[in-house]
Amino acid sequence: MEKEGALNILGLSFDYHDSAAALLVEGQVVAAAQEERFTRKKYDEVFPSHAIDACLEMAGLKMTDIDHVAYYEEPMMKFDRILYGVVRALPGSRDYLGQTLASWFKRGKFDVKKRIMEYTGLPADRVHLVRHHQAHAASAFFCSGFDQAAVVTLDGVGEYDTASISLGRGTKLRQIKSVRYPDSIGLFYSALTAFLGFKVNSGEYKVMGMAGFGQPRYRDLMYKMIRPVKGGFKLDQSYFSFFAPRELPYSPRLVEMLGPPREPESPFDVGDLSQPAPPGSEQEKCRHYADIAASLQLVTEEIILDFVRYAVKRTGLKQVAMAGGVALNSVANGRLLRELGLDLYVQPAAGDAGGSLGAALYFHCCRAGQPRPRPLDNVYLGRRYQDEDVRRALKEAAVDTWEYVDDFDRLAHQVAGLLKEGAVIGWFQDRFEWGPRALGCRSILGNPGRADMQRIINEKIKFREPFRPFAPAVLAERATEFFDMPQPTSRLQPENYMLAVWNIKPEARKRIPAVTHVDGTGRVQLVWKEQNRGFRRLIEAFEEQTGLPVLLNTSFNRRGEPIVNTPDDALTTFMWSGLDYVVINNFLVKKQEVINL
Image (cartoon, rainbow, N blue to C red; front, side, top):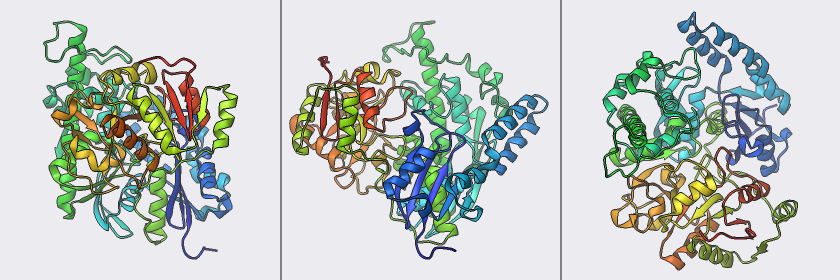
């Protein structure tokens, strides 16, 4: 019997990458988490049983309290698209078809509803499939707070769609335009990501970092591969290998155009960019790849701007809500704000993990006809750990160099003093964040005023590429002192979630060199008291001691690992990295010997 009134809806995404669960309780978003946080396998694609259990626990519910489950794709339509690609690539795609069929049968991809029913105990009529781009669109619009908006989705590919424009009004979403596979801005970017030596579906953000070191000398070559058309874009498929994927998603023709691909994990040293690189040197080679990255990034930005400009014209609305993995391109988002003057909302978990929330919201609003939830201005939707959890973890890890600071204000001042002196600190507080960014609850923090801090964290703590930038977390009302951006007005704007890049004012670059990228930009995080009171208080304490209302913020993890979830995860990362201290709740833990950095 259908429950009257508000519903409890579980949204799920899994079987590709970034599996996740999200929970609506009586119409409100109360919990959401990626499975990787629990399994410790980055981008894990398995059935999100741990995330489901965590969401239920956080809400104080049992599975019997769930009214409906919504899944973020239609698997049979997705398989139809795979067959379409295989047929286009025959006869060379026969082996790929066999491998794909074996994988789908082995992992139960044809029986998604059955697997959900078995885990949840719900009947078939309570388990619902939502199309991939419908889920993305719902995740953006119904969390945005806009009464009406142009809703833009951009990613690699869902079932057939790779991009879409929808008109959102109230509790309704109506798709008015789509771009179909194999024309895909996401696949275009990912193919070049692979060419540049990074992993597809995980290394795209590294390309954005590399692009800052280059010049877009190959822009015209990029436009040979992709060209804008009215309301979309077209790819020249001769440069790519999407239909019958080989080891790499690009073809020999792309290599002929751009030269040999970059070796994964190869050194990246561009030298002094104010000086010419010696001919034939390693620096010249690295600059070549940086120029490819810069060209790819620029063309991607231009295609995105063109597509969003069309959406605004088609709908007559300058309120734009975005989702899909491409919406995580924070450099492009900054340009959308500056050049189109949009009122822009980007779903903080814009990738496939966010599809779990979108599926729940789409069913809730568009099919069940329920009222919209409150705007999603709080992304701290993960699990919280109590002091007894921390004490147990400390005991099991045999860590005895800690103190408990019962007054949080005193703790904030103590930690701020350590940061001032150059310590690098793991900061673990409250519920963990929803989305790929650490926003002050599972963060590694440093002093942005120290020019050597970026190198120290990249080399000794994150163990990652030296060109990767870090984000400046700034008190929201002080942002315009450092960044060429309008005065913040909303806790829903992209800068709250590190989803827009702005130029750092020339006079401010000397004050915060550790968070100033080589091109003079920063991926801003605005910090409001209403969103994260503890992190806000720490930045205030740091300003009191240094005059800087800014902290260097990066995710609390080592390279190749998910962001930490539990106190045990935090202590493991602390002990196996160059972190000087870790703060978990009110526990301040230090190394046996703190290296003076």
